[in-house]
Image (cartoon, rainbow, N blue to C red; front, side, top):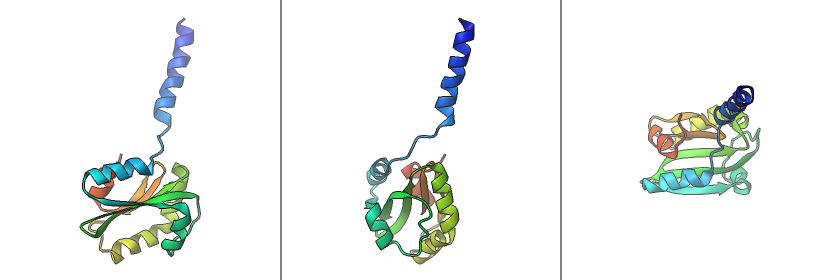
Length: 132
């Protein structure tokens, strides 16, 4: 019996810790709206038209754009997977920095969390659940 349980336990442990859950735009939107952010989910078809200068080097499903008191707070791109989010940030780090400068995002942070690449305020990123 022990010989059967140990491999089962190991497999279950790996499954629970080895995979990170995909972040959904609707959950991020809900979290931000509960804290009085105005949130817009931008569909994939609209992204390439509205957001200029980005290198679309990976599949981006949609984006979340959040403001508070008319000031941009978060722009988050929802990619197909974790690797794509990292690649997207690395390829577009200058564009993210320019966005933060242009819209005067206070103490802007850029990075990725699971399948999401983002630029925004530390507070908005935290509220959205995009930190470890």
